[in-house]
Length: 203
Image (cartoon, rainbow, N blue to C red; front, side):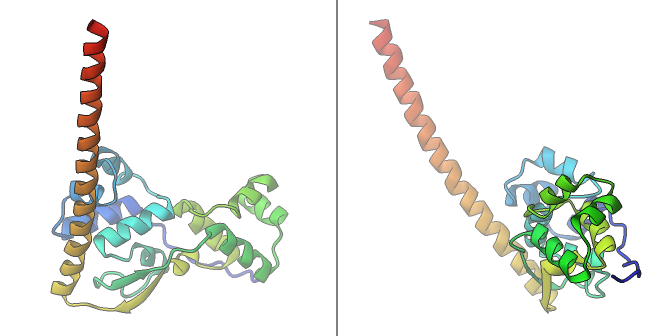
């Protein structure tokens, strides 16, 4: 097992997302709605230093920005790269595989993390992961797991980049509008049924 310590930048992902939104043509509320999240809860999320990887994938798609590259010190991360997000089937399995590669046991990893061995069992069965915890485990296992979440395809023009943003948001708006109409229809049906019931009970 290598004694070399892997360097992982200390990232405040909430600040990174906020800065990206400021440079984009979209508001925080628009981004929140595009990932089906309450704007107030989204504002709270932006104050957090870490975030679940599954949620970060959604935000990366919404802003067409490679947030996972921040932990990899990717030189393209600030160039508006067109991202191809990879969603690992299970982050825990990636961790388990790396443990086998470098020959570290669950007991040893538990000691290094300051947790119990049953907690390691829970870790290797998790699909999504808190980014701060993933950074810590990346250092301990000498593998940058953030690399497993994305690949670089091409650098688009500014026009193409914003076109992708709008296309994504328009699709989400249409989906949510359709869902809203369906819920309105169901509400009218419930109101009509309620009126009939009241009339029946008043007789």
